[in-house]
Every structure is written in C-alpha cells, then in structure tokens.
Amino acid sequence: MIKKICVITGGRADYDLLKPIMRCIQEDPHSTLQLIVSGAHLSPEFGSTYKSIERDRFNIDWKLEMLISSDTPTGTAKSIGLGLIGFAEAFNKLSPDLIIILGDRYEIFAAVSAALIFRIPVAHIHGGEVTAGSFDESLRHSISKMSHLHFVSTESYSKRVVQLGENPKNVFCVGALGVENSKRYKLLSKQEVEKLIRFRFAQKNLLVTFHPSTLNNGSNIKNIKELLLSLGSLKRTNLIFTLPNADPESRMFIEEINKFCEKNSNAKVYTSMGQLLYFSCLKYVDAVIGNSSSAIIEVPSFKKPTINIGDRQFGRVQAKSIVNCMPEKTSIDSAIHLIYSKDFQSILKNLKNPYDNGDTSKKIFKIIKKQKLTNITKKYFYDIPFQIKL
Image (tube, rainbow, N blue to C red; front, side, top):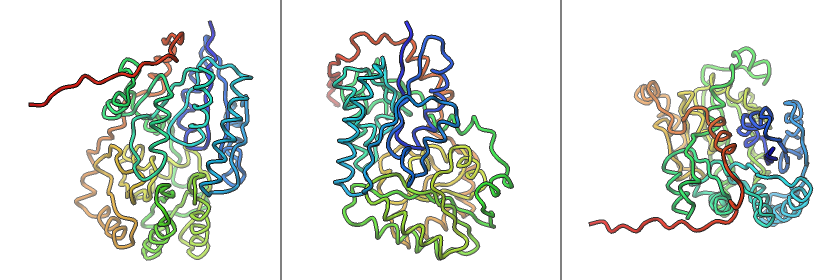
C-alpha cells in the first residue's frame, strides 16, 4: 500500500532542511509526496520563497495563506487561528497517512493542532531542544506531545522528549538535517558568491542573523540597536545581513537593519539567500553573529566561530566554537575581539559538531517506511522509572 506522506513547510529555513527527505519520498515507489506550503513562503515581504520550491520541481499540493501583515502578538495569534482553519481544509482534501514537520514555529503548531483532531500521525523533527528566550520553546514541546514519531538531533534531546512522556521506542537520535545538507553541496567559489550577492569580501567579514527574542518584553529594539552600534564601530570589516523570520517585532528589526545598511557601505542585507549561497558564504566569512539556530547547529561544521547574543538560544547543546554574550555593545565587542584571538582560533582546528550524525535524511525516511501507522495515534504517557539516588 502506498503511503501518502505530507510535508509541511512554513518558511525558507525548514524547507531547505526538509528538501532531502522530500527527495527520498519522491523517489520511493511505495510513497506519494504531498506538500503544503504556508507562512512566510507566500509573503512578498519575506521573498515569496515558494517560487524556489517550484524551481526545485516539487509540486505544491496546497498553498495556505495564514500570515497577517502585522508583527504584534495579536497578529501572530490571529495567524495561528487562520492556519488552524486552513490546515483543517487541507487535511480534509488531501487525507495524508502521515505528516512530517520540523521545529517549533507557530505555523507548524497550527498544522499539528489540526492533525491531532484529524487523527493523522505526525513525525516531528528537532524536538526536545531548548530555546529559553522565545515562545518557540513552549510551541516545540507542545508539538512533541501532539506527535507520534520523534527524530531528535542529540542524545540529550532524546532524553528530554522521553521526559515529556513519549515512548522511547518512538524516539530516534538521527543528528541534524542542516549538518548533513552542509556536506552535500558543492560550495561556490568566492568569486561566484561575490557576483551573486553583489558583495566584495574584505580583510574581515561577518555574517549577521539576528531575530527578536519573542519572550523579551520591550527590550528587542534596544538589543538590535546595541548590536548595530557594535558592528558600526568595526574597522576593515564587511557585513552580510540576512533578515529575521516572520516573528513579533521582526519588522522593527528589518527597518533598523535596512537603515544601517543604507548608511554603511560595508554592509549588505539579503531577504533570503537559500541554503547553497548561505553555506558558501560561511566558507568565506570569519564568523557568524546573532541568535539563529543555524549558527548553533550548522556553523560549527565549517569550523567557524559563532557569537550567540542573548538568551534566544539559551539551553541548546553547543560546540566549543560558540561564544555567548549579552545583547550589549561592550559584551558584543569583547566577543568579537575573542574570536579573532590566536587561542580561540586554535580551538577550531579539531572542532567536533555535536549535531553531526551522518546521513540524517536517509535514516529518517528508512524509519518512517518501516512504521506501521495503524493505531499509532493512540498514545499512552510514558512514565520514567523512579529511582532514589543514595
């Protein structure tokens, strides 16, 4: 019997990670790929990235408009409501046997909430992780509780999913898709990158991705200004900015970054690079600075430093190449100075990425193919055996 496997993507970040699994489904004679595209993919403001999916020759079965043109809490909550309605319509029409989702975005939360009511089994990738500075933390754990197969990136995350009451038999440690993807690509030359992004690398170069911390109340505008003050004081350093996700207060960040780049000729901003161009840039920059998950998970594979600002990623497993600092100019200045030091550069030579676990996409699809989906949606809370430490 052919399984209808529905992959749901809400933006550029999760699509690039999910693409190898989509290829596996597409090429398997016993599986049918269904694809629902939603969220920022359909927004011109965030680059209309659904077009890149079509260029990759994937058929989009359902385009689900759910983003309200507002980055307030009210707008985000309303977007979740629209998503819940839209996913109900999509599932009623497509009738998938299984859905595959990744991460912790509110678009994905809406999708899984609808799938729960439709009794559709859910395979969740990147559960068990901790990001204490954003509401994605709560959404991720909620998604895990509504999911049935769990594909986690490290053993510590595996233990956390079990701690949530999920059966260990349904939790699989497979590594991170982004790390696998970073090894798949034949990276572009420096000249090719410069031509594509219309940017000239200087003596020093930094790649910057900074998102709002969605649990910070009123401090986000101060944080982005502190970062830009630090970056504006650098000498002989060129800056490549990628814009933040569609989160509350993201438009405020976009406005500040655009103003900064208009005033500073050494800085360029890009809405969406795509994975090949992004990874190729990593090869030629000195470090990544900001608070993105990619900077924690994927950048260490390039043996490049990451400056992680603030608490948005607080709690994630980290390689030794990560430097954590406060969202304050003096703290950021110190972190930048540290990553260029000889002692810190020596750490990078033998750096190991804790998220590297081989062919992640093939492992995930192999496990999914073997799963019997009958009655999998009826779950029982798994209690961890109680032990008294003497």
